Image (cartoon, rainbow, N blue to C red; front, side):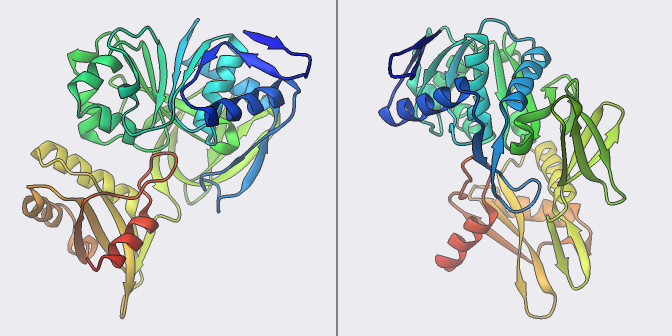
Length: 352
């Protein structure tokens, strides 16, 4: 797969759609085979986003753990997520290590549009936003169903999406949801969708974890001498962890601390059971007397009144959003998560 040139650069057995990707992957391959560290910007799981370096030993360890956890073999990879983020980087690194063929395309909302109906790719990584766009198109769903393994990461999977990908349509496709962070070179725990409880992940071999008195997660990987503390709140049951949200996902409203993760999960479950599907997020705005107020921001749809009623019926009076906003689209991070601060800024700009 790798050919050394006289100028000491490397070629990879891959096909491309865009010169910018070509240049980006070649730099990564060059550094990898020179055993140099690779730098990425963290997503903020362990604090404010920052630039960090990942060692070749950590990347190698992560690649092997993923291959074992997902029982991967000789894969044909369709690469459609940013190389600048750890999910995209590690998908490429795995391909280099295990001599997998790779096809790159520019990241987009529905990357299936770049594929033929009879493609032979076996492995793909997606963020939930991309998966949601794919599920809106029957043609794209058919193309995705030809993959053997789909790895989903970067954010939580909404209940409606989980229900969709566990239907009989996907009998030949395995979906894995991952939990991890940049500092650990991608995921440290995975769950097969449909075979385990949503939000509960099984640690990959070689990972140890513990929580402090506030349920904040600390991770250790002895094989590469890595130890980090995070702002993620989890419950630990043996080799399983249940993600509860982030320590800083809190609205301090009049001295009452509202944790957004559990509130969001409760609402998602109720809306799913009621058939009132809507993408939404919970966030906060300043309040003159309370300090902060909880707000609900949803994507515009025909069930807005019903959803607001269900929210009020589900949450206790002290947990109620002070305001509801309905907008056309969220702003998103590069990893596919709704960007709450940018979404709120956009909402304020248009005077909603």
